[in-house]
Image: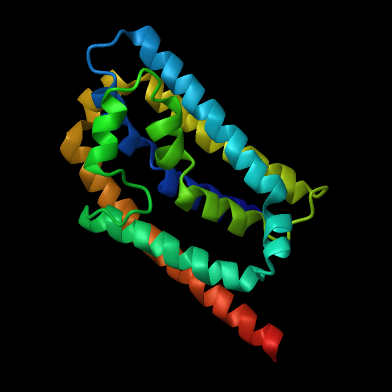
Length: 210
């Protein structure tokens, strides 16, 4: 179980990629005071926590309701994460997590940026929700593993919030280039983990069919 928790933590942290949020947050809050930035950060992470926990609790039931097997979702979710990995490695928007120029312009004119684009699609976007559904599929709600995985979600969101609250100092220390290099390295790791999800799904489906 410990290995599964570590894998879940790494994949979720890579998908959320807190460092990539900081340039966006800095740009959208340029000229605003620190109070506004902190308020948007707390609200965005709070909303993301609600969305993630809803998917964690109701994800398995949703899959069952739609008639989707866990193995099929592993294959589909793995492909989705692989697209996100391509976006991270090549810095090319795949549509999985990025926002369009029009959406970016709209966000700059919003008074409240916590829901869009911070909470969705940047924090609790399709990639993160796919990872959560993959991790919680088939895990009994009353089990220790379920509670531990909830703790992993909260830990990742806590790290994200901490970095968002320190946007200025972190951006000065890491810089745009440093963040880009780290993002590409994490993208390679995510591509490997996404491939593993697909292989596990195919293997499981073949075993179930046999």
